[in-house]
Image (cartoon, rainbow, N blue to C red):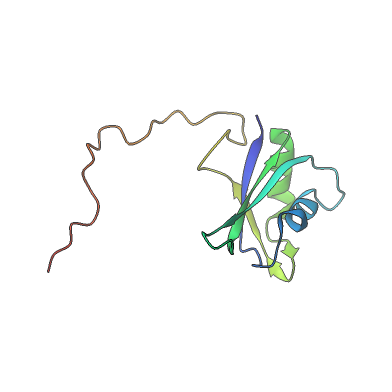
Length: 111
């Protein structure tokens, strides 16, 4: 199981390989196991990505060293991925899904 970070403000031209190379860090010593640029239904980049590291230490270093770094002319931000997978600190989120919501909610429309 890897340790994931969220990367935002990516150039739309950034490919997964560009991202993976950058996210190995300035010394190239961070072990990236996966880099996935998020795309819409047409295949166009959404300007963000998830990068997975082999260890929580590598993920923490990536956040510390690569946040506000420049990739393809843009300052990117790097933070812990809070949406999916293992947390950077090694803990798996303990909260459940939408239990108790009863399917209610959302926009009901109206005047």
